[in-house]
Structures are given as C-alpha cells and as structure tokens.
Length: 393
Image (cartoon, rainbow, N blue to C red; front, side, top):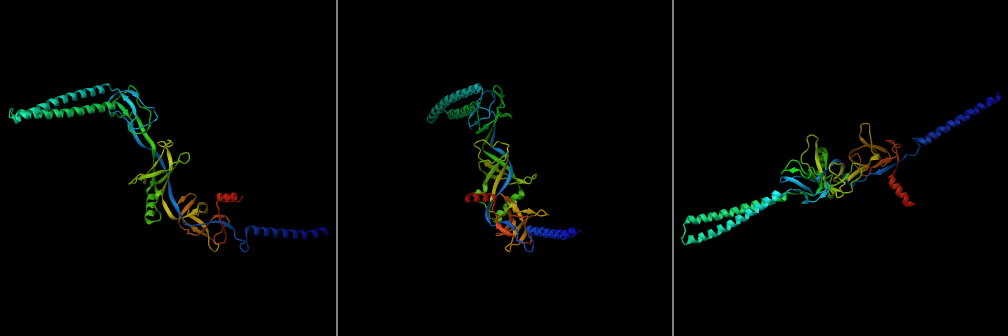
C-alpha cells in the first residue's frame, strides 16, 4: 500500500499545476481589464468634403416625339413606299393614293383660271376705254360705272380661281403621304387596295422619334421640399452638374451615355404625392426603346462640407437608430447616435452625431467596448491595401 500513498501527492501537484496553467492562458487571451493591452481597432478620421448629392428614381422611357400617319384626302391606296420598322426622315414618301381624279381636278382648276384671266383682260380694256370716253362725255356715267364694276368682278374671279387651283394642287400633293417627323416607323396597318378617308380615326402607321429619348420619373414631394430647403439654407449648392443624369438598365448594366434633367411638374399628384421629373438621353444606337423600365440617378446638388461615414462603421441600436463607435482623444470608446440623410456610394451622409476630426471605428468593432480604451490605427480599404502591396513589390 505504500507505493499508492506516494503517488497521490504527485497527482495533486500535477492537477494543481495544470489548473494554474489553464487559468493563466485564459486570462492572457481575453486581455485582463487590469493589465492587458487595449484591443486594436481600425478607424476612419472624418473630414468635411465636397460631395455631389444624387437620388435614384425608377422611370420609364418615352419617345421624344410620336406621330400618327393619317391621309388628308380620300382614295385607294396604290403603293406603300417604306420598309416596316425602318428609320424614316421627315418628308420621306410613305404611301401613294390613286391621284387620277385629283390630277383631273387640278387641270380643271388651271383651265378655269386661264378663262378668268382672259375675261379680266377684256374687262380691263373695256374699263380703260369707257373711262376715256367718259372724260369726253361721250357715254353716260352709268355705262362707265358698269365697266369699272365688271373689271373689279373679273379681278375677284381671277383671285378665286387662283385659290381653287392652289387647293387642287394641295389635294394632289396630299395623294403622296409623307412622314411628318423623323424616327422609327411601325408596321403598316393598311395595305394596298384599302380605301382611306381624309382624317380618318385609324392611322396608317406610327412614327416615333427615339433619338433623343425621354425618361419620366416620380419623386416624392417630401424629398423635393427637403432638397429645396437645403438649397435655400446654403447647406446644399447648385453647380453646372446639377442637371446631369445617368441610367441603369433592367439587366443591371449602366447605360453609357449621360442625359440631362429637363423639368419637374409644378403640381403634386394627389393620388401618389409625387412630382414628375423628365430627363432626356441621347440614343443613337437605339438601345433604349419606349416603355423600358430603368433606374435613373439624378444629380440634385452639391454639399460643400459633407460628413461621410463608411456604412461598415454604422450599426443600429435596439430602437433602430443609426449609431457609431468613436475613439476619443484619450483613447476611450464612445457610442454616438447619428442622424443620416442618404447614402453616397458606400458611405452615409451624416447630419448630426459626428463632427469633423472624429475617429470612427470601422474594423474590430467586436473587440471595442464602450467606456474602455482601444488602440486606434488608420484603416485602409482592402483595395487600397492590395494596391500598396503591389507597389511595394
């Protein structure tokens, strides 16, 4: 039994040593409040900067101009002179209506004008002769008055026949239907042999001007009022870029051409509480088609002393308020409740809660404790770190 008794104290000593070792290791890993080094955190120093304010709004594309092609005289369609779905120019012939009766009417009007001019010549000569005879008192005043009235009537008849000839010429020209605007033409809704009437309800085709093209968007009246108040107070300025606009297409790709903001409605839609904004975009390649859903980014102004906090440095408390952890000058971590207005890229635009020069924690938030000290080091985005490493090699 003596060997067993000698082993027990040894086991107790080993177990005690092991517990001591385990306790010491745990204390070192956690960083004891009394003697451990403060945790290291990455911070961003907030500095005022010039920031372009934008807003992203959903929108629909609309043609710059739309025109229904309709006949202005009646008749039988003889020929279609365009390719369906093609681009047409203003004034380009599109349809030909049978012009035989309009050509005959034009010739008849021309003949009536010639007869009226001949009558006018006779009436003028007679009036001149009667005027001379009246001076010599060889005819009565009544005869002279009748000759002068006949001259005026002949002149009026020439004017009327001239107008009739012009009307006949216009109607003859209308038998050749031309494009009222330039743009892309639809399919033809009527074919050769169809009977058409002047100003009929049914269009022969539709032309849409797609270059440039419009994008209509809706913005809430509350956002518009907030922006106008900021501009009036001087917090937000307007510059040459204030009318710029860009587009994101339905598949998420960026439209390569920049547009300009045209106008906003002066009235608020009672049903939606929004105003309509319209932007104009160049569309030479025809990428944008009427009715497409897009997202437009509109430049609304410039804030000269904006305070931007990275989104990764902003969290929400139990009430949903945005908050950030800030390392004070004495190294102690402090929680700030923020007022944010909108996102600018990967940052929040902060209106209150943060001041210029504050060091906001964006990395190592899990190690920082409010009221305790932290070792603040300047944080670099991953892309910047990779670039610096590449430059060093």
